[in-house]
Length: 106
Image 1 (cartoon, one colour):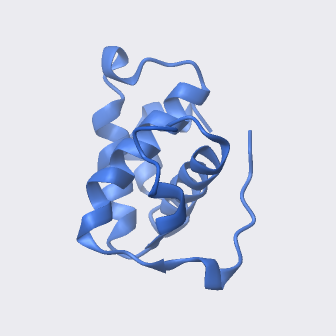
Image 2: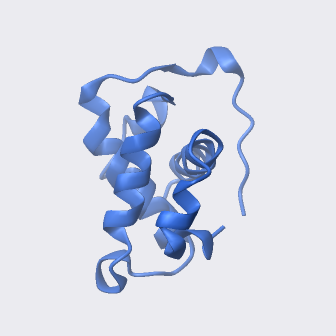
């Protein structure tokens, strides 16, 4: 799995404009990378719910979202999505229990 090493000053505070893009990026990048059809397997809602929760206290990386929809699987977007997925688990470890399907993907 790709890991991320962003410096703290590379992150900027989240704004509402990135919430929807972030949800789609997170779900698409993580599940596509694992070869899972998130829509067919009913996993998309879990990923979006977890990411929304993380964005309430975390950050977004506007750089990684610039080309959303065009380069969904492009490496920097995948790295960013996985970074925020893991960050959400740091902030909300109890989410792993409530979204058990996601635990299998780690």
